[in-house]
Length: 106
Ligand SMILES: [Zn+2]
Ligand SMILES: [Zn+2]
Image (tube, rainbow, N blue to C red; front, side, top):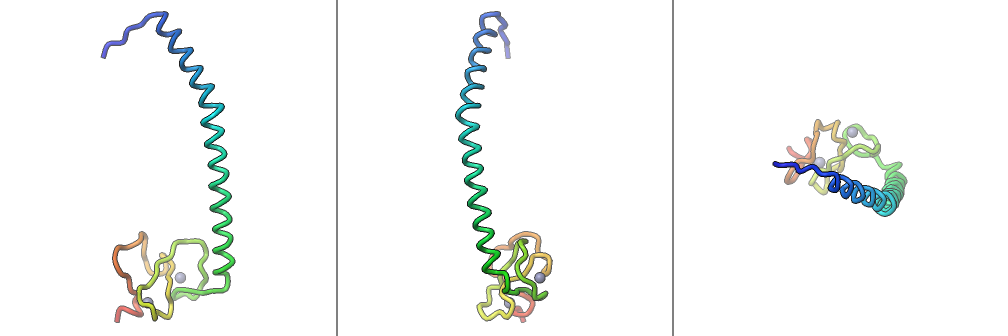
């Protein structure tokens, strides 16, 4: 790669960069901040709704409610537990395919 240096090019680049900076600062960052705020609003309201619904419902072998962590569902529709905390069934990621808990596997 050959880099040609000339005073004219540097000055030209500087004006380009400063114009871009102005553009980015005024339009893009503003847009990003607005979007970020809107996303946060949606996420928190969705979480709040979930919390209210699941407040008194208990799941899992530990008979605890959903407390914000990830949960895995047993695919047996008659499962007495239904949902399990990842940590209670020693699961770290969502497995593929159908999942049955220890109770329903037998
Ligand atoms: Zn549990
Ligand atoms: Zn089950």
